[in-house]
Length: 214
Ligand SMILES: C[S@@+](CC[C@H](N)C(=O)[O-])C[C@H]1O[C@@H](n2cnc3c(N)ncnc32)[C@H](O)[C@@H]1O
Image (cartoon, rainbow, N blue to C red; front, side, top):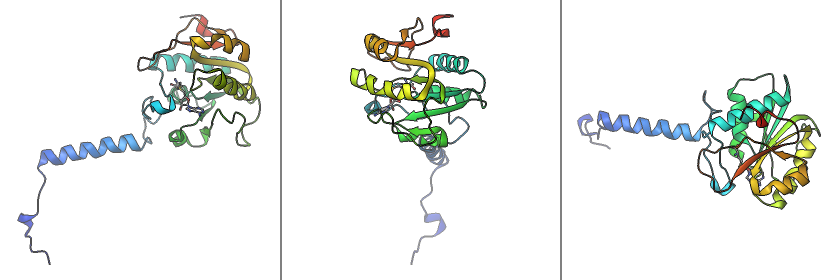
């Protein structure tokens, strides 16, 4: 039997209790992206093992607006390995648009039916509801700067898009990008939240806003 009186039970000080509550709140925020800000970039932290480098707010907004303009009202947008563009599109509350995030990182499954598991090694391995040529624009940023990765990713892009393609990748991939996807380099230069060693560029296969208002 316990013989401790109430006075003998160890008590946390007010300050220790407040610090503990703050700690638990932070833990919850990082493990459960389900609140109002569930679409904010960085809510799901970068995992460098998966080659994750999130765009800056300004770049994500620019790309999201470009995707909206290209898709048109009520259009369909595929964000392939570009989760921050998906998040920005959803933050803009454009419920008239159908937007999907194709991602290898299953943490993005918090976005429910708009998440589609995608591994570039199996470029055409999609659920039945993802029909060929069913997206007005595909915006894509492959995880690796290699010909093999871009070639396989290009198969996915060509399967998904009706026509328009917006590719973000290293400047060193220009030749392969032109050959595989028929895109050309834009004037707009994408930026990331952290410094990325390689120079990144955007490429499109249509006359885009990324060549104007830069
Ligand atoms: C260079 S990052 C592009 C992210 C983009 N800058 C953004 O902010 O949305 C590459 C993306 O590819 C995803 N990825 C990693 N491995 C992959 C794989 N095997 N297949 C498809 N995508 C993969 C990463 O999770 C990451 O979102």
